[in-house]
Image 1: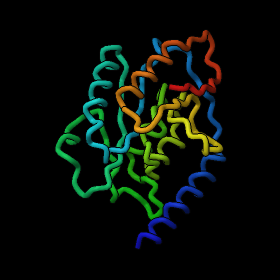
Image 2: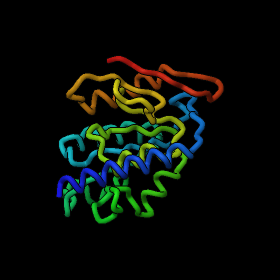
Image 3: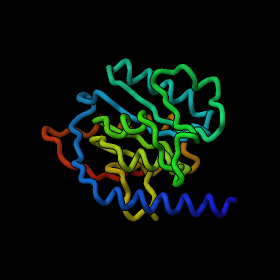
Image 4: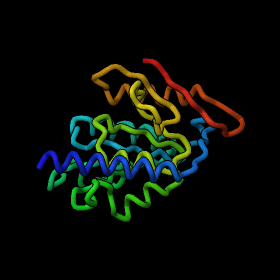
Length: 194
């Protein structure tokens, strides 16, 4: 059973790579003060990280920045702390196709939404979240730097040592975004060592 699951995931990644090769996207970012929408993809199996995400949401809310979190939780029932939170949607197993690609309308809306920034907190490389990150229409995509990754989907990468503390990760992202300022929206390729 595990072998079949692994093969399906590999095929899913190949299909996703082909989809990605057909997409043309312009990277856009000028300054954190102009950001209105941030999307986060998050491996919701890491329940201990949720309080840090809630604090980040609150900080961004104080700056009048709308934050939406798309999580993936493979269990049958969502933990109580994830229910009735308006800024959090979780991909459920029943919403996945044979190759672990999410199929719900909420996912399509999240992907097609013109987010100013997408922050990837999918450190375990869950295929449903990888799908969302790769196909997202966000102006700027931020994720962890990985030396073995040949074609990273990220426009800005953070090089943070394991284990990654999510609160520090999010703080560092905002710190560096505040440092970047450009009059014109232009492509940004940046790797930041921390």
